[in-house]
Structure formats: C-alpha cells, structure tokens
Length: 267
View (cartoon, helix red, strand yellow):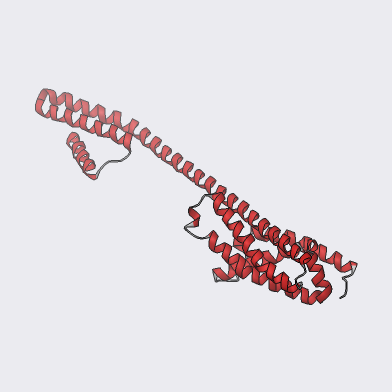
C-alpha cells in the first residue's frame, strides 16, 4: 500500500473545502438545478440530489480515516470510483426514500416539527443501512473503520436533514408573509373601492333626495295618494341602500325590486 504524499493530502483538503461550499450553495438552489437540461422531473431531482450528496460526502473525506485506508490500499482512481458508486447508491435509495416521506400527503398532515423529524430520521437510518454493510465489505470487517462509517453517516445525513428543515421553514415563512401581504393588499383595495363608492353616494344622494322631496311636496298638493306612495318608495330605497352598505351584497330579486322603485320615484 502506498501512502499519499503531503501534496496529495493538501490537494484533498482544498478540494473538500471547495465542495463543502459548493454543496451548501447547490442545496439552496436545489429546485432550480438542471431545470433547463433535464425534462423528466424525477430524473432531474435525482441528478440534483446526486451532485449535492457527492459534494457533502467529499467535504467529509479529511475526517474519514477509512477513506485514507482505502486511498492507501487502492489508490486515487479506484477510491474515486468507489466514492462515485457509493454516492449513486445513496442517491437511489436514501434520497428517494426521504423524498417519498417528505411528499406523502398523509404525512404532510403532521405538524412541521414532526414531519421534518421523520424525514431526518429516515435519512439517518437509510444512510446507515447503506454505508455500514458497504464499509464492512470494503474495509474487510475492521471495526475501527466501521466506527468512522457510522459517525460520518449520522453526521452527513443529520446535517443534510437539518439544512433541509431550515430551508423548508424559511420557505413556509416566506409563503406566509407573501399570503399575509396579498391579504392586506386585497383589504386595502376593498377599502379603497368602498371609500370611492361612499364618496360617490355622498355626492349623488343629496341631489337625488332634494329632487325627490320637491316632487313629494308638489304631489302632496296635487295628488296626495301618489305623494304617499312616492314617500313609501323613497323610504324603501334608502332602507335598501343602508342595508347594502352594511352587508355589501344583495340578491338579484332585491336589485330588480329596487330598480323598479327607483324608476317609480323618477317618474
């Protein structure tokens, strides 16, 4: 077995730091990754998950003593191939299981904390179920390297789950604030429309009332019965106007009746 040189160690650490930052950035852009290049939604999300998992697992390599064992035993090429194979298996099993739980309609009825905790727990258990047997075979049952596999599996899956939970919370909060703002704007538009209607009524009603009262005054001299009918019609019209202002709705039948009353007054 050939030990990696100091330069190779330094290069590995630099690459790991870069992939750590890349993984965090790609996770925040997860829903946008490969949007234009991969049409199939399931395939696109699996490709995005593979890239994110590859970045995070690569970033953990300096803390993984088992990886250095594999590097010394098999060399760079076979170690990288093994890492790619491990990432692919993890994506197919772990990501799709966690995605199925996260998007389950029945489980979405749970509270936010319970739902996200269930997703994180599924990530940890499924990651351990993949990595521990794989590591046992790869490192020929050496327990010290199995310990690294268990710790890294819990750390990687738990950290990924926590980041997912934080992003989900921020998304929920963003949507809540957006909906609250939309509701406030809707109420403001409604208040503005009502204020404009009230202003219009305040201009029209006095003029209409003045003419109607003059007509009633004339009819009280020339035709008392007609003047009485007009007074009752005017009272009905203003009663309807007040009730409509309070409730903001009326039936078609009421609208037709009030139109007839209005025309009766205008005659």
